[in-house]
Amino acid sequence: MNKLIKATILITGVSSLGKLLGFLREVAYAKYFGATSLMDAFVVANMIPITFGGILQIGMITAFIPIYSQYVSQNRINDARNLINTLITTLVLILTAICSISFLSAETIIKIISPGFNQETVSMAASLFQILLPIVVMSALLGVFSAVQQAEEEFFFPPFAGLVYNFSVIAFLVAFHSYFDIQAIAMAVSLGVLLQVMIQWIGLRRIGIRLKFNIDIKNEGVIRVFSLAIPLGLWASVDYLNLFTVRILASSLPEGSISALSYANGLNTATVAMLIIPFLTVLYPRLSTLYFSGDEKKYLNTLSLAIRMILFIMIPLMAYLILFSKPIIQILFERGAFTPQATALTVTALQFFTLGLLGTGIIELLNRAFYAQQDTKTPVIVSFIIVSVNLCMGIILINYLSHGGLALANSIANSIGMLILVIILKRRMIFLEKRQIAVSMIKVIVACFFMVGFSGLMFQYLENVMLALGLPLRLSIASLVGAGTYIAVSYLVKSAELKYFQGMIIRVFNNYGYFR
Picture 1 (cartoon, rainbow, N blue to C red):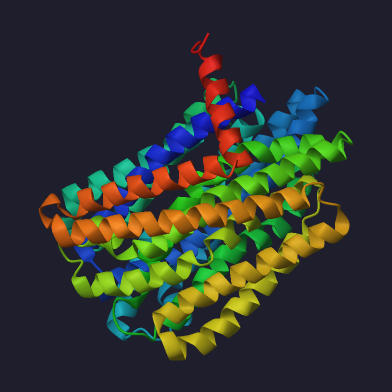
Picture 2: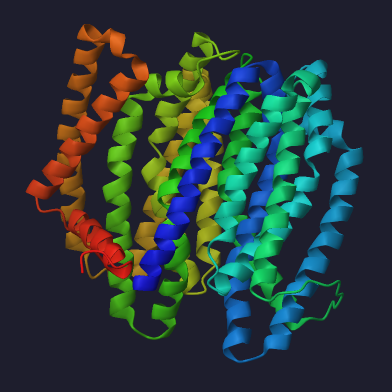
């Protein structure tokens, strides 16, 4: 458990710094290009490379680890090394061919995914799409590189590479945005992903992995990885397919709508990636080990604790983002080309996206719970239900709430998906701590009620009496009051999750020689 805590702290620390730079990257996007047709063109052009890149990374990481770990545990080191080299060779050859065809068909692809764009925006998006295509191949490499390092319990380089990616994108934009205009973003993103590949390659060499070209179409391990990765990729595609749906429908909305949705969704996604994914990254191998060791009680207790921790973190975060959405967007983005009108568009999208934040976090956890049981079908089926609900609700709500309706449809779909997964898991296994989960949720809601009240009143007081402090400082003070209130009320109602956090912090300090 101590190793689990250390790894979680390491990943969280480096990832948090990377996500902070990710926020600054979005700030740079907003400052130089705002919520305009140029930014809309980039967001659409980036959809396919990022979608397939993300699916490949998630699919490779989740499918590769158990097979590679099995080879290593059986002392089949040569087979493990051949698996790495053959898988990488196969992916590079297949994806290079696909990207070459896509490069030649760029404008047709853009017209299909953005039917509401005019010809000028289509042409711009197509040129950006061609610059971004190499990301697909490099993302597959990143997926395999990350999987190998996680299996070897080397957790530093993947999040560190993400940190370098964000820094390099920001630096390139600052230096070259005036020379290349909107193409600067596409160039910066492609360069950033290349740097990620180089850094993770260093990570592989550190653990003794040497890469070489190897073709073996009958490699048993590669076949097994693809057999698992395909359904995993289908599951992973749900978030991206939801965004595809949102952006295809949004292409017919006024200029800036796609960009506003992108900024708001990016903020929500970064929140989950910073607070939830590092914990789940380390938890997943542990869940697999507990399940296959036959210790069902410990498996369920660990899963129940994870659910309670997500509730403890995500519910107050949702309340905070909805309550302070406008000042957050103003502080992060409203400068340069990002106008007050763009702020209004983004605030609306953020509030509606935030309603689905809890569903997203729980889905991330429960999907891993199914994968730990080697059940890939259930998450895939539920994923398609989520996409279908999102599409249907989006078509309906866009007529009433414009781009806000698309964000709300996404949240509704994720919430429904969460409920379906909970019901399926409940029928399959008995939750040993159902009562504890319910009690914890009630305590969290009570603490949130006081948090919202005190922080909201403090912000309103500062707005009316102390405008000279400046918006960032006013929001910081209100946020500290809210956080202090949440912790204090959680302590008074004897929150088990707060005690767990306290114990975790003490154990970490003890591990490094403090409090002794």
